[in-house]
Image (spheres, rainbow, N blue to C red):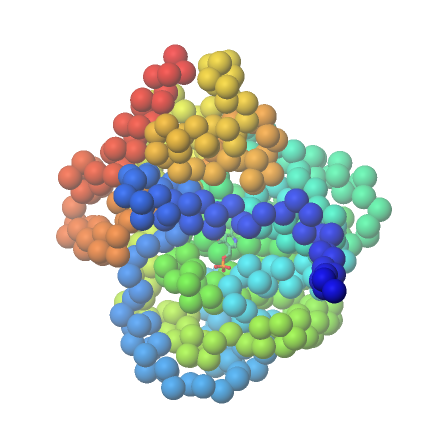
Length: 436
Ligand SMILES: Cc1ncc(COP(=O)(O)O)c(C=O)c1O
């Protein structure tokens, strides 16, 4: 008798593929292993070495072997509350803090615990929407315009909010932003806070890049203006270049509802990941203790991201490519709509086609804006500026040390010091010639 296995897949997975950011990274790594030259602008990962203080802390805690409380190591929770109180100019107590294996898992947990409709700016980071889909939650992209540099339009949000019959609503904001690099202004955040308070909308404020603001605009957290309705999400992945350590934090409101939410999130944590790795949590205490040397390192990395991002952005603008004003993080959203006819003539009908074309013919890896919720017919790509000339393990330290010598931005970005960046820009130039 032939045995058959019955396997019924959960329908919420329908149409979902592995996260595009991780997928493009694996594709580029495979091409590199085959000896191909690829300009990796598809993955946003800060590549600098782990700060020696953190490396030492991790090795000296390697023997920490017991399970820790699901909510997080109390000593870590304490420094996190203090750190965010000082950095965001908003008081946080220990009871408001939850530690998780990366902010991604915490964002998923919040979406699971709440039966909320989700409102996402377009474009938005690739994982919020698929997470909502996995949970069977409704999510809406808020229409935006490239002419407004994709700014969040409160009127457009209001139209969607009014059309919904779910009284529980959650808006996601992300400043500095992935994929646009934009930083929301203080006055806009005040306006948004007033709107959300008046309309009973929770705000999930993804502030994972807040230590990577390299433009004129300073980071402001909406929690300052709307503490009772804001969930602040953060972690160590971006400003300390330790995405692989998997440390994320959530700071929930100091209210009765916030406390209930924390209890439910703790249930979620205890029934899934149990607790973040013990040695990592002990070492993370050093990351949140505001040591001068660690703070200096964060500032140096931020400056380098800024110099590289500005250089690439200005060069692309010179080539006739429209780019968002990138003031934080290591991303630029580049738009090619003005070349629509030339693109169609090349049989490029979507951002996804454009991204494939650049990879196949010019060896430039990017991500299509459609992965970030932009309409498919919009020719927008997300370009990461963190990987070029930082491909090997030695490159980031070389650039870090060079910057420390006090070298000018111009000299830092010379062809000698940034050959891959110059080569990638030449490849873009060749492509642009085909659109004229
Ligand atoms: C906007 C944004 N939010 C959240 C994350 C998740 O970061 P982690 O899970 O490493 O904390 C990322 C990572 O790429 C991101 O770009």
